Amino acid sequence: MKKLSNKTLRKSWLRWMCGNLSSMSFQWLASFGFSDSMVPVIKELYGGDKEEEIKALKRHSAFYNTEPQIGCIINGVTCGLEEERANGADIDDEVINSIKLGLMGPIAGIGDAMIPGMWVPLLLSIAIGLAEGGNIMGPIFYIVTYLSSVTLGSYYLFFKGYQLGTKSIDMIVGEAASRVREAFNLLGAIVVGGVGASYVNVTTRFVIETGDVDAPVIANDVLNNIFPKLLPLIVILFCWWLMSKKNVSALKVMGILIVISMAGVAIGFF
Image 1 (cartoon, rainbow, N blue to C red):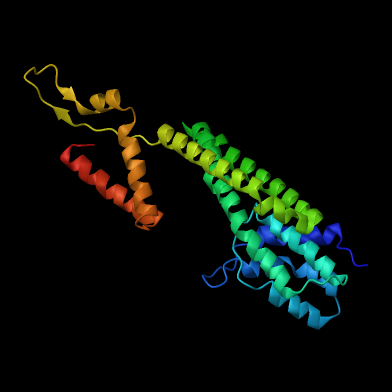
Image 2 (spheres, rainbow, N blue to C red):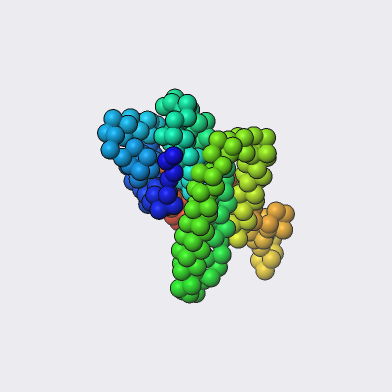
């Protein structure tokens, strides 16, 4: 009976973590990173049978795309499926690819909400606070915390997926997983909102002259009394509208903000 060694599984995990997005195209996305990560597994299970090795590489070169860190669980599940297939289980190419395709969407929903939607903004908000005044602990904190957390988390999920095999499918695509995705989406929105309120600062110099020279109406103070942080909220919603509704890239949004800022300063509004 063929059994994948821990050494081979670690090699597969490491190759995925180091190369998951190294060969990207709109046609294939992360498929070649996935197939490369399966090379150690294929060699151990089908070593010497060139025909089976070629078939395995071809089936793992199909279109694939998910969030890489949380998505490690799919790599582990696939390793388990390949092991079962090599031991004579009735698992063909279609079964393996169908399971991969069926899992990559739900995992992307969970992973995108957790990593770029919640974890990265949370770590950055802490790092920005530490970096105020030029403290080098800010970037060091972010680099160390992010790399250690995603490395340990992905390693655990990879081996958990391998151990559970197809049993993990119900856990990932079931009703409980749907509630988890909704919870992380909500938490991510709260975190991003908190980061925006803390670090986006927009004020106006606009002043309304009144009959009393010593008591002009300062627009910024009036706005903050009515709705604190109203201008930063408007800027955040404007950027969200450009990127989500008009498909404007982040680089172009930054350019638009620079132009608006220069125009506002020129007319005395900012």
